[in-house]
Length: 201
Image 1: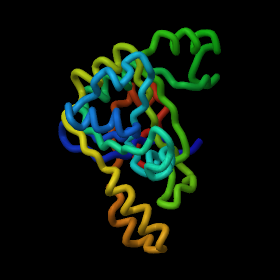
Image 2 (image 1 turned 120 degrees about the horizontal axis):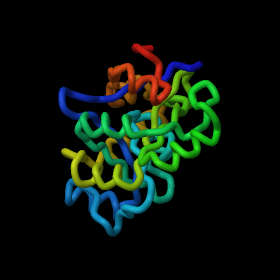
Image 3 (image 1 turned 60 degrees about the horizontal axis):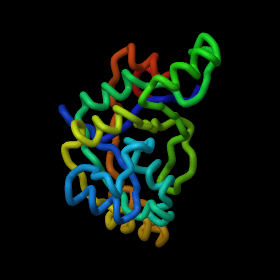
Image 4 (image 1 turned 90 degrees about the vertical axis):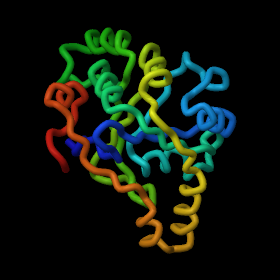
């Protein structure tokens, strides 16, 4: 199995996650330091990602439709802990779940979904280890919007600078501008719940 650990920018109380939206939602969020409905839709699942380069892969360096605004969002570490403790893996795994039926029942009950996808390098090519995506719905979205967010920044211009440097073949310079992400420690019961790998890669 590929290594599955959370890598992120974090301090004693917060962890940085990334999201991409259209400019209307993104600028409204920046103005209020949280998501306001409308234009943000509270009834939809929203995915947060601690990996900067996975966010760049998903958004095409802020070029894809409705992903033109990249937000770096600081959330409380206690909020992330709640999300992981109330999560279910997005895909059935016979080694982790008693049956497909029990997994489906847990998935329906859980307000948070966990997905592991190949991490990306600066060229957005897959690496041999995985990065976490965390999908929030229902009560998890409400907590995210009203309790967990402590700050946010529109980093779209920064992302475009990195992208231009890569396009110009200045990869080493571009790499210095990529946020440094470190191993994020998790308690054992969370490691097993989200099928993470114990210890850093």
